[in-house]
Image 1 (cartoon, one colour):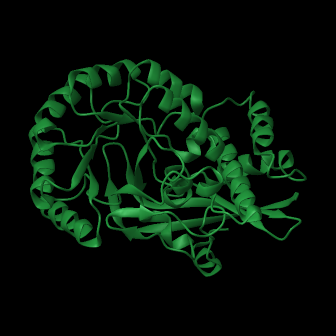
Image 2 (cartoon, helix red, strand yellow):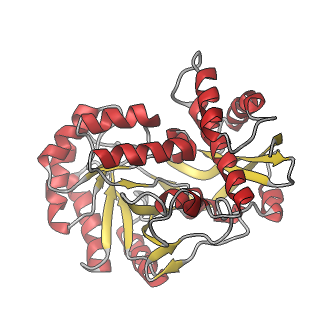
Length: 361
């Protein structure tokens, strides 16, 4: 099998209402959808995204600049293809937009491989489970009132979720404590709860807030300080009993190694488009297991299920509903856990009607 061509489409997905975190104001997400054609008539699909659909042309240009390294090649040679792209980006650097492009092409190649083998990727990678713990992440935003938090938290429980994440980042510690407490009271003690600061705090503020939240039994406290501050992460982790989760803003196994060696995280959270695609995500999951550190996926819910179903140390799948409209298929909750897809490859295929409706260019 040979890759014969590449096609890119830009789309913009509006959110139901604007949302805010400690560092983001989001009204929509924009995606570059990638399709790799093959001489066997099979397509491999993947996407990357930006908030508010900014700089999509740059994303697409970087993807297309790497296309000559994969067109004409066998997608089953994914390790060789990944290394070729890694060497090619040396001048531009091994973080940032270059990794976004590698990740998208790598994931599309794996989708082709799974479809050609007529196997779901999680099976091809070596399945360890048929469903995985999942938490609702598409809500409980910093911009919500307490009444809105309570209503949405109860809605997530009604939908079947047994875990969810609330955002923190108010100027006053008491405000965040009141908001997280309201969510905990609304869902009860048996539903798992995480809190995400989105890098919004200083070390001292994060420790003081984290200590106040200890009694609420959080599964983890996520990105309490800026992502680049590994010493700060480690200081917060050492000061609190609540596990610290982070990693979504770091790149490749080298960045993850630095975090692990610095004891900056208790739960490693790679992001598929920053980590380097499924090839590098699998490496990172194995690396984390050598440190006895669990991993959790970040966004990219549909595309990350193959990791969640094949990495024994993956403890949670993040459910972000932003991209569901792109696909024909839907994910399925089973007793509060997310079932693995049954389709070949990633198990999800772009819906042409939805793509046309959301298309920018």
